[in-house]
Amino acid sequence: MHDYFSGSNHLSRREFLKALAAASGALLLPSFFSNDWLQTALAQLPTPPFWWSSLRDGHIYGPEQAHACFGLPGSLMKLVAASALLEEGLISPHQVLECRGTWVLKGKRYHCQQAHGKLTMAQALGVSCSIYFAQAAEVLSSHRFLQYAEAFQLNRPTRSGDGYLFPTQSAFRYSSQRLVLGLSTAMQPSAAQLLRMTRHIAKRDIAGFRPQTWQVLQTGMRLAATRGTAHNLDPANRLHIAAKTGTAPSGGTYQSWVVGYFPVENPKYVFCARALNGTAKDVVIPTASRYLLSHSWA
Ligand SMILES: [Zn+2]
Image (tube, rainbow, N blue to C red; front, side):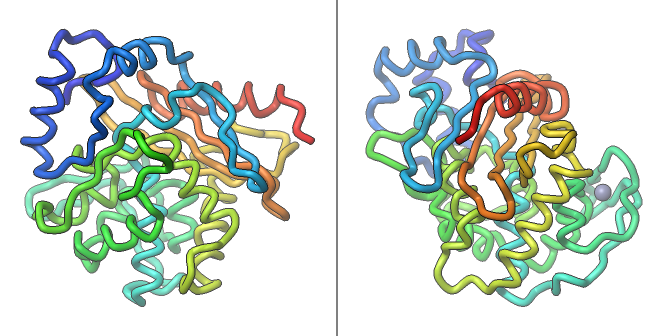
């Protein structure tokens, strides 16, 4: 897929959006996407950008472009998948699935960087085990996944004029694995939407979700920040962070995100960082860590 943000390809924005529309079957795009403003705004993004917000007032601090910066969410969607699987009773929090490093389904091969062994869902979130979630997605329909993505408001802007992509239920005919692993080009949330999703998890404030579901999401994110994919965010545990990373291929390289909240005992802040070029481990985690550990949090 064309790297929308890199500017390394001369495909025009209009042509790109047309190609995306053809690929995804459904788009929600605000009219300002044709404006010069957006091109200028995206070109001015610091690399990589970091946003944060207080849970009290919800104001987003950081580059103005939190509302326009969107992309493949990668493994951040495992949080949505976990919610759907638990709330629908499709998998219990204690059920163990095994990761041997590779798994094949209908000719499609799924990989983890290592064999993670036997994992519960919280542990699978912590190490971001794609094989656990690819297997679990076998009992989760795309339709059901998208219902839970809607519960996290990924189908709605955070304010008028936001840029993001969300598939319509009727247009999405693929297996749920690509959605669960955040690799479907039809679904590309903005940084502002991901901050709002993280706020929902920190505050446990989606009506009807069971306490057990929140417990698994929060435990998984805490595991990620202490000994999983985000363990280099705050190695000395100064801020008591819970986090989730997401990396997705993009035009021969990778794009990535990290979202999180802290302190876990009584959450006050949420944050989101995005690398337009590089994996979570190599680019977005070191950047977010520098910001988090150098800022003086009240
Ligand atoms: Zn694995």
